[in-house]
Image (tube, rainbow, N blue to C red; front, top):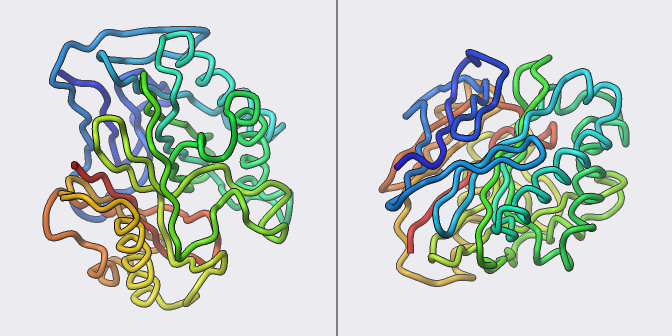
Length: 290
């Protein structure tokens, strides 16, 4: 049964439903839809305006971010959105937030600490601090910029049981980034191993330590990103099978540079979107089955 579906391409509506999210990201290659299916019955749940669809173990849903609210107070809007979804999953009996996908219009709007993404990180961290025991309870995450003026959305996966957070030895933990990246470091882990033994790899880019590598060279960034993913997988050895890879590129002309990131198995979709740092040209996320 259908648990959740994500549509690439132009948005057909600004209404976000429990089962469907439209990212607004142009599809450059591969399937335009990302399907999450359940082998067992799925039922709807709604709490405080947040709609979910869930089976016995997993709940998925989304929260819409309105452009007017983001312009008025990005940090406050992010905090309220995360507080709402965290309250909803706790109420529904799926208290463990495993994965989030954030789509944010004008992600680099503003300068320095007032940049929209940096302010979003402030609000997200405030909400998570009230609902988690610490950074290793943070979810895996992706944050991508969508076309201007579209507000944004957060879609998420939660579970009845905790997952296992996994960090990357090649990269500084995102929650330990130094102050030069903003007033609040990003609040996510590099990957989450689910209780049912999938691996959810966060958005991964050409970052070693905490520094961006190879600005202006998409092929070198793709190779570094691949090496980061491989290093992450080595921290959780298993007989992994790649089911889905999503690659995000800032500019369509960099489509040819993503070859190093294309998997030997599974679906691969390439979407056009802004990466969370202006100097990063691409990133990828991966779903693996154990």
